[in-house]
Image 1: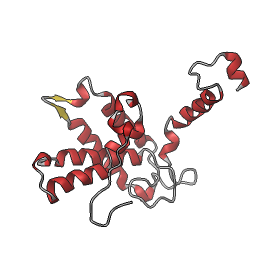
Image 2 (image 1 turned 60 degrees about the horizontal axis):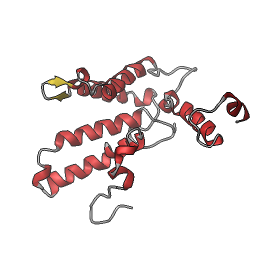
Image 3 (image 1 turned 45 degrees about the vertical axis):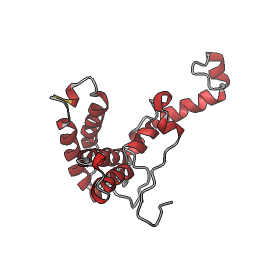
Length: 184
């Protein structure tokens, strides 16, 4: 619930603060690189003028860009009204302008003098760029066969959910035997 005073509420919990054992949790990354974090940074920088947040515009822009990329790659509902969560269709052709800008932005990011996509930390950034390029293959034109594309259907979540169900039936064993798998 948002307080009426204009302050943003940023959820923090034990998992966000003690992230060492939660490194592979996309849910935590999404919360950290979200629109609400970008708005909080802007509020602390511009409205409150806190010195520690001076010149945080680049970080805010990064959080917004990643948040919007997550939304584009995770569209689930063809009737969604939220920006960037709508499926790809002729009506959302402007997403491709955003995707092109985001790709150029990710390619231009630097760690010191080295571009991020050429550094040891390149994997996530290259993943975004490859995913953006892949969406161009699915560019939706108005046809009888494909009127829209829900990008969530292209993710590996479905396979992960399936394997999670298998693990839960076997007592959360990561390596069920063939007999256990058959019984499941």
